[in-house]
Image (tube, rainbow, N blue to C red; front, side):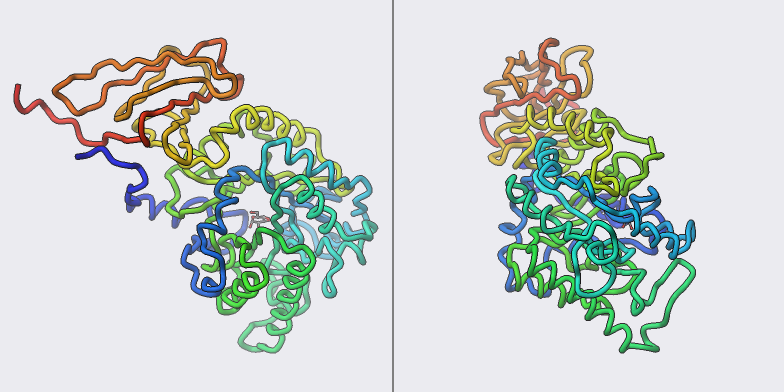
Length: 466
Ligand code: GLC
């Protein structure tokens, strides 16, 4: 029998290869990020079962990434602008004088994030430039070294939690400004680890004590590491870092960029073409071409396009982490606000098809993204644009009990054509979506099924007897 539950699908070799090469690249990176290893060895014993730990993340589907730092003052590339030699380190650091956070309103940030339909947000607590957004004991920070003069992380964490949102903190393992870190710029290295292990140890002590500060003060739900490509797991002591985090908070989630010691994969900037093999994954994406605030960058994807990206991502079982880059004063560019608001309209209306959903059926069955309810008895079809006729679903071995448009429940006409008694091939399911119920961005149709979704996936042969 060929009708099967989609969960049993074996990862295709091509999918595995694609994962290895897929969107792990980024401007100027040296090497690829390792895919998350769901059975990360260290600390796993102490941690709550991964399934339980990952549950909120898996259900959340949509998060907002926030790149905020002194780079917003001149609107230059976050950290990379001095690393790549576009400007000197000294000039880059002069931006500290202009970082005042004078309009920073974390409650308004949280309200906007909530309104967008995101269920979590991730703030850059310290990027590769080494400028921490809290008053860390060592290194450069905005409290001591900029006119902002106060902790910016704490109020963010509190505001998010007040609004019932989960808190993620981004932390760059490399600190290119720190005197004991080996890499300074693309061209300049301070020293070789093997020649001065004591100096490297000083760096390890520094960064791990910063992580301890973050854990003790803010206890984030999610640690979003970055920059692991500059050293291997043993040089970073990734196993120990994972263990320490989970000992402090057994529920914490760690992204993949701690070498192989993370919980989920983080493809970047490219909507995956094939479904990633990793059980948990999150696509991080900029709205325009920049992570931080770059006012001249007008290459924005519009809300409609981003809604399609979100649908595509959740249809493959992933999360979307969509980035904003606030200005140096803490205000958010209108273009970014508008996108989040427009996404909020769509996510609010289609909540039942988004949150807590599972990856849907393959494109061979329906020419668009789809998701499934947790019991797999409701199939959500994301319909692009204005259909020219009836919408087709192929190879669905279920009876449709009810079909409706999500967000209003307008009934959807459905009929099966081309079904033959003697054949086990399911007929062609045609859906007639009422034109007046179409959504301006993307319409979602819910099919309530008689049993968990069952798909026919056999090669159809010529008739053998008649
Ligand atoms: C890359 C870049 C960095 C950015 C990050 C976001 O790793 O180095 O600038 O913060 O991607 O995913």
